[in-house]
Length: 290
Picture 1 (cartoon, rainbow, N blue to C red):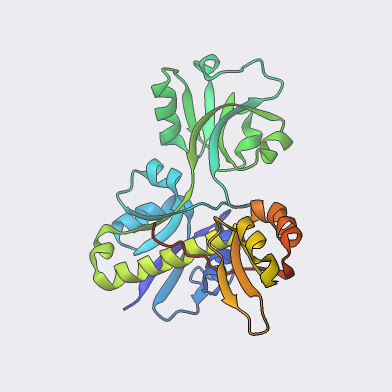
Picture 2: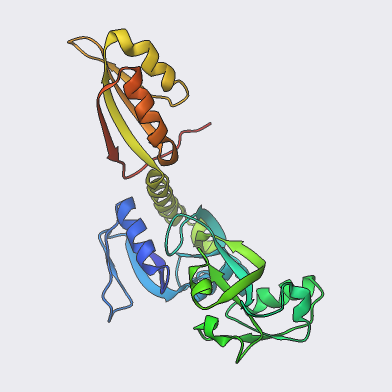
């Protein structure tokens, strides 16, 4: 038996392949082949546009796949959302679908778009957004390069962004947010009832989640003389360090630190008496049960 998984082709492709690599799966993508190889005999990969993955998963054409919450809702697909994987094209974060108009435009709110033309790939959710806000607009499907549609071909756009850099480069300003979205591992409901497939999908989810968590952290090892042990452990009092007693005296300490905190903690550890401090990247981090 094999598990067929959809890998998003396009903007999420490289970051998804890299995430799988961090999780322990090597996917080899050939530009002329839509069936990448993977070093797991129980998995078969297929490259599909993220917009199409949820419908194909719902139909059972593939057992599971990686796509955005936006495309699950846009297509109305009935799938099992196995895991939220917070990563995007450029980093470990959420993306947003925003309403944007030219910087030079006098329009500063969606209410001022009454009767205007909106270009977007996210047609259904955009229509619902404006209907919810009681603003009548003409929503048109955009086949891509949406940023260049205004002002000649549309009055405003609804486009996805992570950093806003592309919008800014095209001299656009954001006036509202339609939705935030994150990447999801989804499964076909019937496939997820199959014990073998459910187990395999759950294992993939665990490894992908642990690879993402590891990117937010670093491992740190150090030696601590007995005379400095109390001070060093006080710095690490809420970090759950692993401690080993050394034959020659003192202790060996291993701890995992969040990247946004290690810059301030390592100087404090050295000041407290830690010696031979070594910092290193970790490939996976699995949170324990609370």
